[in-house]
Image (cartoon, rainbow over all chains, first blue to last red; front, side, top):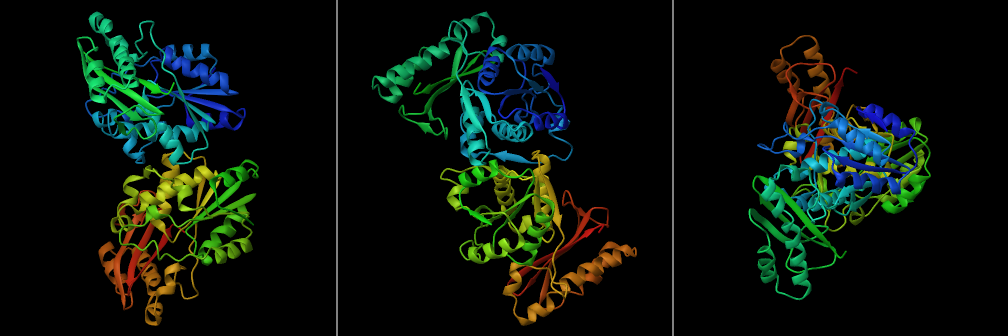
Length: 275
Length: 275
């Protein structure tokens, strides 16, 4: 696997690259969920590019960009083992040179839920991925289902701006007890870790109740009761998978989404329907 | 010359296109200035694509999108004569399908001068050209110097977002009396048309005075006095060609810009330094 740290070297590689390139953008600190994206991309493309770039634009004030976990050596080893051809790990100044001032905003799809909690977050995500797509020029972009709203934002970006690139949403990888893989799981103490899988059980129960015809709010309340302490629910909702608009019933191509705090750690999970 | 009206047909053509493609985006109602862009592109590329698309996003409230001049048959004939290979003239719904909600904003470079007068205008320009670049995938984009701020916005777009595309700013084409070519010149009555070339004389005098070391404000006042009635000056200024930040002295790579109203018609002109 080749490590490339400048856009210039990336472009030089790209000019001689095979006809199909799959792309897996990440912020590093890789876990099995990320590696699954890389393996998925590997199975579908002649070449695979992964990026590790902790994107300052998607951190808000008070969010700790400086303390975000970084382990390029470890990430490099893990990605090489999945068969990735090129790891792109640029410096911040290479992606955002002095005077950089452009933003891509996809609108309402990034405004509710995580977007409401983190103003500007999805603008930062859309801007960096919009730029990375120009540098990598992939035929297919791979994103994780776990970050459902992010996946909707990136599909919107690609569709609205006519990038000649497909977007594949790769199913969430879970621990054996059902907890969705996340870098944040490491922050959970023992009690929080024990309670955390109840987030997924709550989602499954909500879907089950809705499928049996239970009224929406009654189903939501009954499912929400399954979240184990110290879990504190931020939201349990149903949204259109394209627009991320709130729904009050199950529908084709929707996400049932949830966020909850376990101590100081906030966890997300979702179920994509139909699946 | 081939006429293509859907993004699908454009992409199909692009897949078999020669290795270098030059691109001239326009809103139609073509005059010699536009045709010069096409000829310039013709001389530098194996294939040339021009687009005619009256972009609703760059019109503000109260600006008359519906009355914007349209003459696709005439434009087609003129472009064919310059040797353009493909004319892309999509429907509004093809570029902005229902639910379209994405915007590209290049920031301060589009906020003063024309951007202050037309809020959202340059966001609309950046968004449509940002998308057209994904559809046409040119190696080089050709824009007219007459719209100086637009040229700065598009250079910023391409640079900030890392499009793999050069931007060529093509010098303004003028009538024999010095008036810059513009679709709007047709709206001038006889007296306005006689006075209009004084806009360019004013710009030249301003540059001349600054070069002799005249203090900025004195030079500006002396030059501004050359604008002939009924011309009414909106601004006469000097800006950095990259950032469009106001300057108070001539500098390398700056524009001296002016806008003036002649009756109900607003005209722009500029001088690019050094030239």
